[in-house]
Amino acid sequence: MVPLSWYVILSAGLFCVGLFGVLTRRNAVAILLGVELMLNAVNVNLAAFWRYGDNVNVMTGQVFAIIVFAVAAAEVAVGLALVISVYRRRNTVVAEEVDLLKW
Amino acid sequence: MTIQQVIFLLVALATLGSALKVVTTGNLVRAALWLVATLFFVAVIYALLNAGFLAVVQVVIYIGAIAILFIFAVMLTRSDQRDRGPQHNRGWWVGALVALLAFAALLVVLVGSGQFARLAPELPEGFDAVALLGDALISADAYVLPFEVASVLLLAALVGAVYVAFSRR
Image (cartoon, rainbow over all chains, first blue to last red):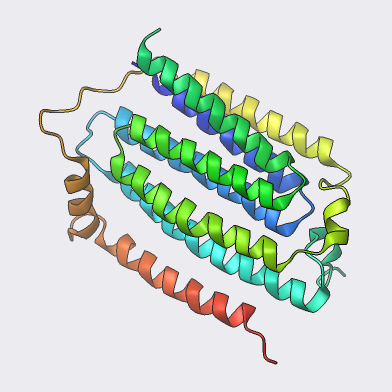
């Protein structure tokens, strides 16, 4: 049997790889790719805690994961729409060149 | 080391390797394809966890819809002069440091929890996770309210995305 800690370590690693992508990428689409990795890491955690919890008949972990799926889909739709809108007006997708709100 | 552990280790290494390719590959179309690989390996992880419905939803929604949406966005915002510049900002090592520190902190919390070697309980005879999940999603004393709120959220995101990306010309 695989101990719970292996899943949690995998999830932590995936989360930190995504965090690295979010913090360092210049392209806004690539930043959203990193956010997807982080959301997936959270979902792995939720599924693992459901399976390793005391009562597998309580489906809270999986229900949470499905809500995260829905939120991720909404986030990607709005985020990519913003990126396309910015690209259309400023002709760039590099995050640091979009400084309209910079004072 | 049992066969399950070997399978888990192989899938976990493939997941982390393709995730690293997602954040380091310069060509964004390739990065999106590496994301598809990562999502597929995560679906395998769900299958290993007996969460069959999540594995299927992962393939259908994440790979089938979200990853394709990413590839569309890359194609729509492509401009060749941007692809050749550096893909990471100047302070990338700070980001790497923060990510490593976050990983170390998560490991410390995990070790401190004392659940390091916890094993999964045996599944009961005739256990049907999909039926239980469906019951939990639509029964009034469980999660029907978050389920309906999620549908409203998706509708709002749909309208918002159309409005934001709409071209007035």
